Structure formats: structure tokens, C-alpha cells
Amino acid sequence: MEYIILFGLLGVLLALGVPVAFSLLAATLATVVYLAIPPIVVFQQMGADITSVALLAIPLFIFTGELMMKGGLSDRMIALAGSMVGHIRGGLGQVTVVGSTLFGGVSGSAIADVSAIGGTMIPQMKKRGYDADFAVNITISAALVALLVPPSHNMILYSASAGGGVSISDLFAAGIMPALLLAAALMITAYVIARKRGYAAEPFPGLPAVLARLIAAIPGLLLVGIIFGGIRAGVFTAVESASIAVVYATIVTGLVYRHMSWSAFKAACTAAARTSGAVLFIIGCAGAFGWLMAWMQVPAMTVELLQAATDNPIIVLLLINIILLLLGTFMDMAPVIIICTPIFLPVAKAYGVDPVQFGVILLLNCGIGLITPPVGSVQFVGCAIGRISMAQSMRTIWPFYLACTAVLMLVTFVPALSLWLPSLMK
Image (cartoon, rainbow, N blue to C red; front, side, top):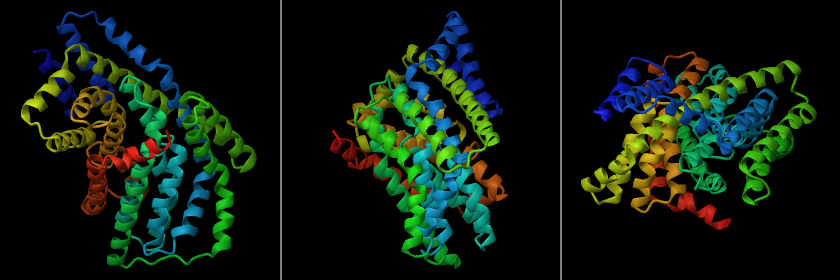
């Protein structure tokens, strides 16, 4: 009966449109009351999850991304990307993918990526004769690259959800190859669509212009090297690197770029505080939900159920991907990571999947969910910027879905894509 209360009530509340965090908390409290467990335990678990030292890196990295976004870095990234790939067919679409890849290495957030890059590129594409649906779809798909490159705070969340036993530096390294593969797949898709629709290319500005724009973007790009290199070399922890990133971002945007006004700084602080508060509240509620599932032995039951259903690892991994994709369509990324990691990570390990590889698989699944209704927060932001409905976006987004799904399958069944770089750096 307790399983029906926990999952049944959660499903009903989500179907009614109740926010995910409150749905998780209500389902957890109702089940705890039924089991005669003191409700105070739920709030103790919430507090224990959000006061973890490792999670302190998340609001700091969010703040870093806001500083860079408000401090003019996105404009320099777009200019650099334009000089590099703008001359390819569908040039502005190619610029969007490369710009998102570069900026994602600073923001670590798909929402920040689509807001910063999309806010500039979607209106430009529409002005140059690109269809609005193409402009939105290429932008929201490219934003998923930010989930896989350092300093992705979702990787930190996955590491914490896995009990802290998965190296954050290994996760950062593991996401780089899949991120580049995803970017390449989206660029090829954009090229094919651009040829079919007759989109033009931008003129090549020449090597001197490329070099000048690269030099202008180097201070911002160095942030990725500082974060990843410092953690990988063992110079500082993820939390320490996040603190250094905030200081570095403040110096670059305020003193080097001189683009950070006092009002922009206050706006960055406000936006970071609002986002961090929402993320940490979801983490707390999802953490309490995950604790109750562990207490009810849901992860162990899931392992036994899948092992009883089939001993074929390919089928098991396909089933896990399908479940994660479905969950990602109506739940935000943080609760999916916190809830599903303790359930499916033991299953994946039982079938020989490395925890680092599974982290990349999980993030890719969640990312595709971010551009899929009914929740689809990244798709919602992109459609709002492009001023089209989500239905208009969905009619023509399928080539980008195919590209993302193809990369997901490669990452799932070719472990070297995720594990080669971490092994090379040990």
C-alpha cells in the first residue's frame, strides 16, 4: 500500500500541475504518515541533503554563469563562433551551436545558455530570413551541450546523489567527448536543414578577425581551464574551484571586459539567488523522497525486477533510457537525477556500466527531457524568445531529436566515448 501512496500520489499531483518539489514533498509526507514514521524525519532529511558541503559548488557555479552572462561574455563567444563557422551553410545556426558550446563551458547550465545565446541569436536569425522554428530548435538543442562540459553543476549533483563515490573531475572529463560529438551532430543536422530550406552562409571575415576575436574571448575561456585543470590536478576541490570561479568572473567582467555595471551585478546576484534557492529546495524535497525510497528498498527491488525480466544488458540499458526519457518529459532535471541515481545506478553497475559513464547517460536523457513537453523548461524559454508556440517548435524539431538520440545511443553502448579521456588523465 505504501508504494501506491508514494508513487500514486506523486503521479496525481504532477498530472494536476503541482510543482515538482511540492509534489515530491507531499507524496513523501503522506507515505511517512501512513508508515507511522515521525514527519520530522522528512525535514531532517531535507536539511541533511541541502547542507552537504559538496553542493555548495552549485550556487557558486550558478553565480559564475550569471556574472559571465551579464558581463558580456556571451557576445564575445558569439563573435568568435561567427568568425569560425559562420561561412558554413546555415551560418547563424552553426554559430549558435559553437557559441553554445563555448558559453556552456562557462555557465554549465542549459537555461543560462539558451537565455544568453538565444537572446542574441534567435532574433538575428529571424531578421536574416531564417524560419523561427529552425532558430528556436537549433538553439534549444545546442543548449544541451552545456550539461556535459565543465563546470556542469548537474554533474556535481549526480556525484552527490551517488553517495559522493563518483569523482567530479572524472565526470567533467567524461562529458567532453560526448559534448563535442553532440555539437558535431547538431551542426550536421543544421547544415542539412539549411540546404533544404535555402539558408545562406555568412561571409568569412578573414584570419586576422578570427585571431582578434579569439584574443578578446580568451579571458573568459580561461575560466574553463582554471576550473577543470585545477580540479583534475588536485590543486583544489570542486567547491574551492567554484569560489575561485566567482572571483575570477568578477575580475574579468568588471576589470578586463569593463562590461559589468553595478545594476548588472545586482541583477546577477538576484538571478543567482533565485535560481539557487529553487534548485536547493528541489534538491531537499527530492532528497527526502529518495531517502524514503531507499528505506522502502525500491532500488533493490528495481534491480531484482530487471534482472528477473532479462539478463541481456542491451535490453536493460534500453529500458533504463526509455524510463529516464519519459521521466524527463514531466520532471525537472534535479529531481530526476536525485531520485533516479540511487534506483538505476545499482542496476547499471550490476550490468557492468561504469558509474562515470552512467552519469553522462543520465544527463543526456535529462537534457532531451528539457526540450520535450509538457515541462520542457529549455524549450519553453527558447519558444518565448522566438515568440512561437511549443506546438510550432514540436512540428519540426524531430531531426534534432534524432541527432540527440543517436549521440545518446553511442554514449550508452560505446563506453570509450565517456571513459577514454578520464583514463588518459589518470
